[in-house]
Length: 269
Image 1 (tube, rainbow, N blue to C red):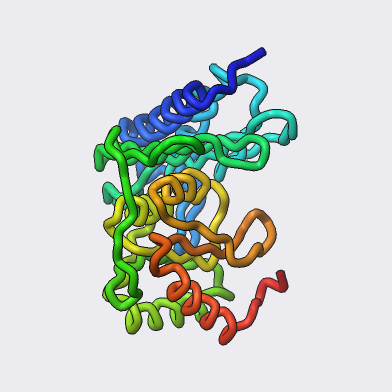
Image 2: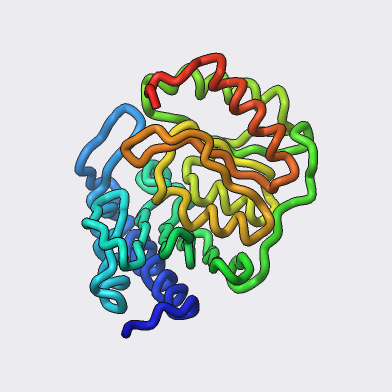
C-alpha cells in the first residue's frame, strides 16, 4: 500500500511546486507566448507547461491521484487524495517581468488539506505547511501579526475581472481605503495570503477566487495562527473569501458583508 504519511506528502508537494516554478523561471524569456488574452488576464503557454511539470512530479510518486488545476483537471476518485495546483499564480505579473508570482500546490484527503506549498522562485521564498505542523518560510516558523484593529491593518485585496463584480470590487476597495491603514493590490492571491501568514499584512479579501488560488495558502495562514473563511460559494468552483490574522477578522468581514449587501448577488448563488 502506498505511503500517505504527512512527510511523504509534503516532500512530493515541494517537488511539484519547485518543478512548476523552476520551469516557469527558466523559460521566462518566453513569457510573451500567450494562448489567449482578455481585457484583464492572459493565459500563457508556460501556464500549461508548468502544470505538466507539477503533474509529472506528483504522478511520479502517486500515479493514481487526481489533480485539480487551473489549467487542467482530472476526474476525481473519492478514495484517493486530490492535488490542487496553480502552476503560475500571478500570471499577469509574470508576463510583465514582475517577480511577484508563485507556484501553489496542495494535497487534500478525507476532508482536510494535508500539506501545502507556495514557491516564489524569483523572491527565493518557499512556504510550507502541514495539517499537523507549523507554517514555515524557508524552514523558519511564521506567525501572524498582533495588530487587532482594522485602522492599523494593512489589507491585501484583488481586482476582479468579472464585469458583474466590478462595482462591488471598486466599492470594497474604497471602503477599505478609508477604514484600514493601507490597502495593497499585488496580483497574486497565494502570495498575498502568505503575507498575512508571515505577519506582513493583516488581511486579504477576494470577491471571486478558486481553490487552486487558496488551498495551500489557507492552510499556511491557519497554521501560522490566522483564519481563512469562505463567505459565499458562487458555483463553477468559484467563491468569495477573506483571510486574516484572526484579530481583525470580524471587522474585515463586516466591511466585506456590508459591500455585498449594497450590491446584492448577481451570481444568484
